[in-house]
Length: 147
Image (cartoon, rainbow, N blue to C red; front, side, top):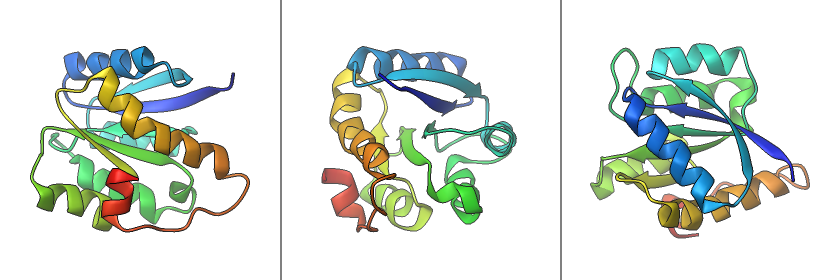
């Protein structure tokens, strides 16, 4: 089984650990994790590394998750990485903003659970598997959210 490189971005170390634990407990793939404590730290690690997937909190100091995602998507290699927002922001307007305007591929509301990860990552991991086969067609935010 291929090991996926994952960047986990949250200003709370406890939440980074909870995200990694839930992702591993979902058992959908093997992961190698790199942690970032805010969007600025994540941007530096992203630019100096290669990641298949990123789990990004919204509300962080220095560079929030939404702005981080937009910066990643604006860079040439940013189109290849799958981005999952993992956040306490639960308003439909925020979900729409992250998925449609921000460029996130999936959205999970905190508290994160292995069940939530399984539902959301199944679609994201399928996109990762197919990305080398054919280009992924852009979809609206409702399609991204519910598949």
